[in-house]
Length: 409
Figure (cartoon, rainbow, N blue to C red):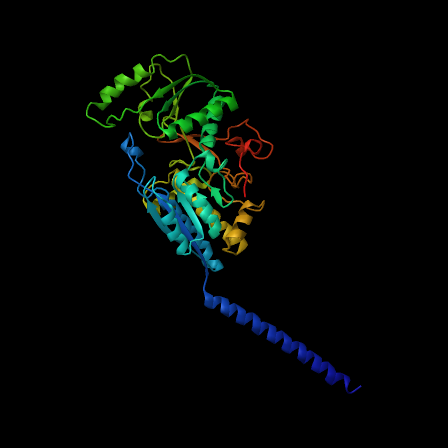
């Protein structure tokens, strides 16, 4: 009987020592992690930039367009990351439009940037996409609206926060149909981006029941965009150019190249609204948006950057926040882990657009509402009331799953 107590005490002492040892091991592991510092998340930004002309001086893009949105996203990520042991950084590389993007891309990779936001052409993006896959790098397209990047030339390591031309055209078409303005004429420019947006508008007309009753090409003759006599010439030219058009409700304009579109409103032969790349314009964001908490991000943007937020800023900010949200939820900066989480049903990101945003699994395009606005205010947002979808009303904008040509691999 006397030997039971000492044995019990020995057993209890043994368990106590095991507990102390486990606690010490845990503390040592935490100390080692603390010594390593916060989890580093390096994000690159690859941008094709050259000063751009615009028909209106008010439409000249800001020098830091897009970049400013990414910088604000880094600040937002670090606000949360400071409590979770995460630290986000941004490295920016600029190249010439149309130039080789591979060198600047490799510099970003060599500097440890496993996530790269891009605002480059479709051709430049495709030139680095496969190399990025081999390096285990995720690309986030915040600039190119080309459908080919999401369809025939889609890549599993490329996510898209910029909307497509098809999404923009569908958003506009839905509003025009909702307004019962079903008869359209289409005036398009002679450059490739103009032709691509014109194609998107034709697709939208067929999809939603609009009728394009006439089309007309505005040829870029290379004349000066600004001249002392320019206003007088334009005032005379545009009415004549639109004089022979059949009866219509709306003039659709496809002029991404900024050659003539801004000159159409208030100068057509008959008084009709203008929409497309001028007049009522569809976009990923509008500087005047104050809905759904938009005032909050606009104010922070103005305080930090000194101007209002434009579409590329929002697309870049959203891409940065997608990365930040995924890192926070997974507690990892491993690109394979992040990509898997972004594609999962658990992922969503709040972006001041009325609902949580997710990626389409078939082509990795971000679902998002599209703003319709003029130069001063938001007129509406699409998808419009009555355009329903069995999964998400946002999938009424752009290429839906049964239509996709994307095969991710």
